[in-house]
Length: 272
Image 1 (tube, helix red, strand yellow):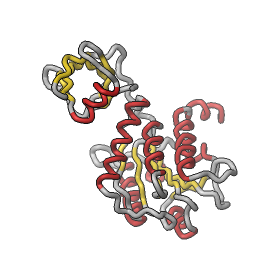
Image 2 (cartoon, rainbow, N blue to C red):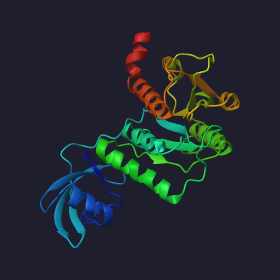
Image 3 (cartoon, rainbow, N blue to C red):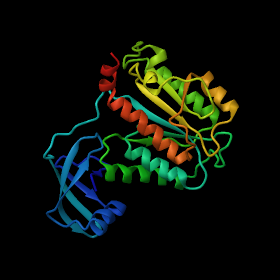
Image 4 (tube, rainbow, N blue to C red):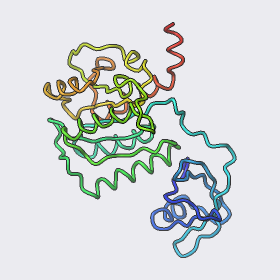
């Protein structure tokens, strides 16, 4: 366990009380006992250590103490990366959700595309499982980014959300125009069918506030869907010449985008 995610803030004395699944994980799986410490992340993103004070009656009581190392929140210059994932079949979405959370993506937006077998209505049980997978992945990986997931959208809902996202990105907290609309939120469409495209570096050269990455299901996107994405300002790109499974494509593309953003200063200097 890299870090444990606390669902609630400690009380005024720094005391936390954990029961249910949290108790079972820490006591029965991790075998923590009185006097031991474990790293944790507070709901506001700050790091802490929790000392186990007692383990009684299916309740773990602990006290938060300052972590040895200062918290290092994600750099504010790092754009948010949002995965727009067409729903795949079976349990593949579970893997995609886990990998996205481990990789530090900001948000996962499932949606129904033309070739999706799954439907837009995700039951509460499935959605709760995705939220649990994100929490487990962040605890295992130590990601400081609070990855969230939306309930599946229709295509109409997806493009409405994209429009809202672009609008919100050009405004500052006071509601004033802060960024050029064309560069505030950049949409990338992962597609293999011979569309004219530029290198991935060039799409990320404008320091966007948000990068939205659209990945299709098994079979990819239809020609109609591709046209819709392009009409809504998405930029087509491919990575290599191999055909990837949808769960591989999501990880592969998100990793490529995140690495380029993390190392942007380096490759920008080399271009000059």
